[in-house]
Image 1 (cartoon, rainbow, N blue to C red):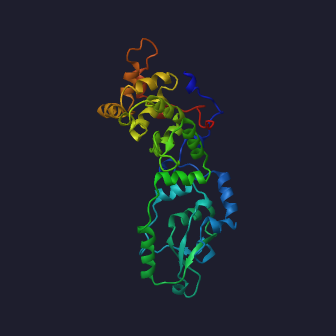
Image 2 (image 1 turned 90 degrees about the vertical axis):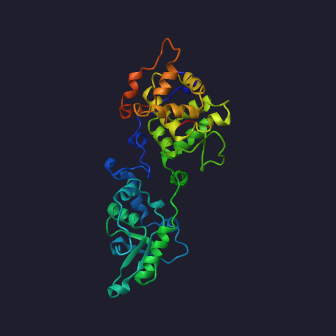
Image 3 (image 1 turned 60 degrees about the vertical axis):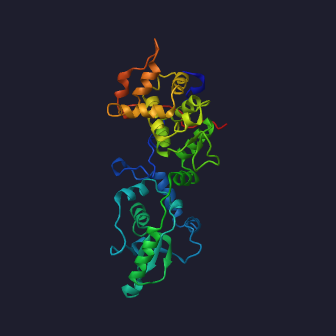
Length: 337
């Protein structure tokens, strides 16, 4: 293995390191425990801490600490729960990132009995109910009583005008939360010299925009090598030849290739062979055989093997399902330069 790509070990990776459960990709089918027990205890301790006030950013509105059991959902205007979305929140729950929950005081409609109607934050509220219990008390923003027509209007205003977070926004949010996987990915990119679109100050080449593939490559333990191979392959290439080098299609195929052939590849040779063709030409070749090549690696294997007398990659190996290749003891964090 080439000197520049020597891998180091840091003990066996934990399940957290091996499996990325990002908030845009978690599936209910894959859920085991909803959240780490230690993190759950940490969240419980935060429930009655003054930092909740600043954490929820409720600085311009009346705030009350109320029991979740007193908050109801009105199906006449409020959409129902999306179980997939609810599981996503619970599997990565962090009370410090809870955000603003908005309710309306509707006790007037209940004979003066304390009651609140959820306006914004139904999924987050139900996540708290499930994780911490119905009697949990949270600080929420409370609107004074208004008729149901006005409540429905406020609900639409909060939900229809809400702009969905971009993947760059999500990455920055998880970085602020000190998510270790995200911090490691940022460290790897910095070490290799690759910018992250919408995250790093510079967005000049080399820059990566494929966030899902970044986390996927990280989960397989090959992200650092993949980025280095692409960087070296197109270091001297024209803008046209390298413009899609760090895009989703190239990253997906190279992550699969390096994951499958980790112990067989000469990474210097791979970088050299990769740079012989433009990134667009590679994508065209992958698309041409995608019906029979589910991993998108065949064109790379064939080109790598060209004119090799020994050390050829086994073509049959490319058909082994990716999940059978486990990233045991691969680098997840690199020293920053």
